Length: 368
Image (cartoon, rainbow, N blue to C red):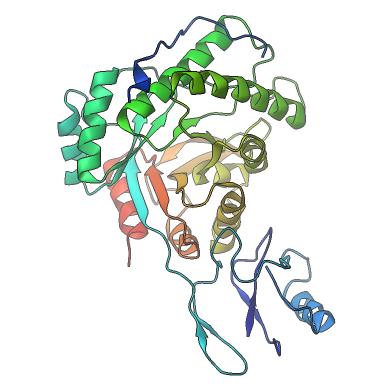
């Protein structure tokens, strides 16, 4: 049999159809200086019969068949189990999933970078997102020492920029815009100093605009920022996070489009936010796999998925606050199963409000 892959939306399980076929961080940040203006079923023998069979299992048309890509596109096939050819019965083994790292959304110890890494290791984590949401607390020498210790311990670092560090301002000038640029610039400098793999930031707000106009503004201002960072030798990858308010900028589609248009900005999947804005829909493997595949299609090969995860309280399809694991309805098991379908590695940052929840999530994601 040949596995019919989905190009966009999925039902959750594979459908088998029987066929007969150096020091960049030391540059100035200029916090208050404004910028200038800124798969396939091939060959198509018996295609009509295939369409009939797909219609039986997918009358709503959610399962789109990708044509002309074979079993592997940018991602490996989402079906992790072996299937057997109709003639020879030879098993077709899909590649094993990539490594899943799990980490915390903050440095656990701030007085000494080596002690911080030791604390992460003691708790069993192999990733950590440096927490600058409320502002900067780490200087460049501290970041360098942290990076050295993290590399020795095989801990992957990322940076979360301050919350005011977003692009897509109505005007690419003024104090707030200059501060946002400076925050992202400094975040990139810290990332370069410690070897962080990505700088996570928020996409901003609609501010009365259409999604298309707001996205165009974000992309334009990111382009100018990137030129600035390249001039300082700190043009590290950025990651734009899916947000948790249903009527503002930051949906999965918004984030994917920003990534697609920039090329150097990766989507960051926040499944708690996505669970909230979907009114609690992320219960089955299919939706997790669909989101991962959408990211896989736009993100550069070989780089890891970057994911935020926790249980979540929400109302009217808007996030309220993170919950201890198990108190809400979002679970890590379907995420783990969805990640099994991809060769791309993943870094999952637990944003749970307590250590016990983060440990529970880690245990599930690390289950053999």
